[in-house]
Length: 100
Image 1 (cartoon, helix red, strand yellow):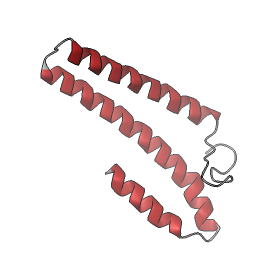
Image 2: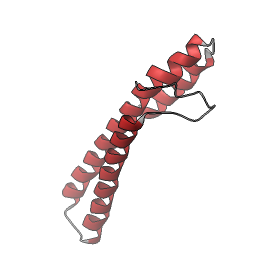
Image 3: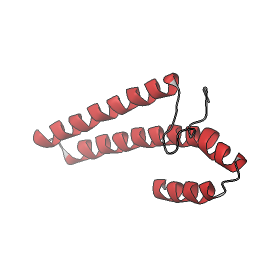
Image 4: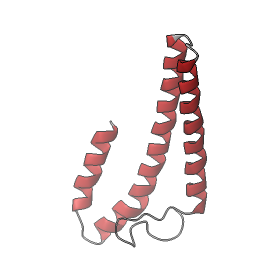
């Protein structure tokens, strides 16, 4: 990934400008989807149509999660393992279990 380590400042993460812009763009789209779902509910749109939009929003969030996880593994996890901090593996496994 870009630049420096994500964990150089404790629990803060450096992601690089390109990844940050991509994540923000995707998050903005999900926000729009959620507002659209609210509008559908307010307009009494057919249930199946709303459920399809909810599925699409979930898929978009899953995609964002995978990007963040990939960055985390390529930076924070590798850095901490190289530094001898094996506890990061337990933290990562807990995170992956939550994602699944």
